[in-house]
Length: 51
Picture 1 (cartoon, rainbow, N blue to C red):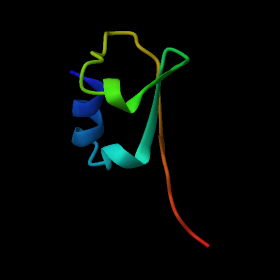
Picture 2 (picture 1 turned 180 degrees about the vertical axis):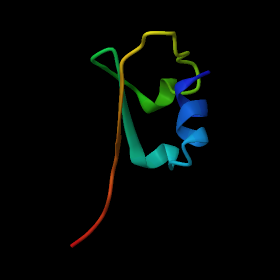
Picture 3 (picture 1 turned 90 degrees about the vertical axis):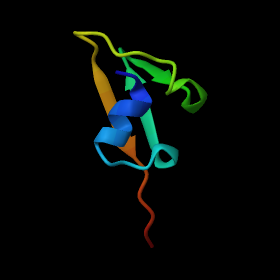
């Protein structure tokens, strides 16, 4: 599964998230090409507007 597939499966907006894999930011341009491996450590941050 790619980062993009995971974000989509979680029903998040791919344009509104930042993904860190194994302590490294995955650039949005690589979300579709970055495959997740067993044991990967992920952090997904969703941007929220407010005021």
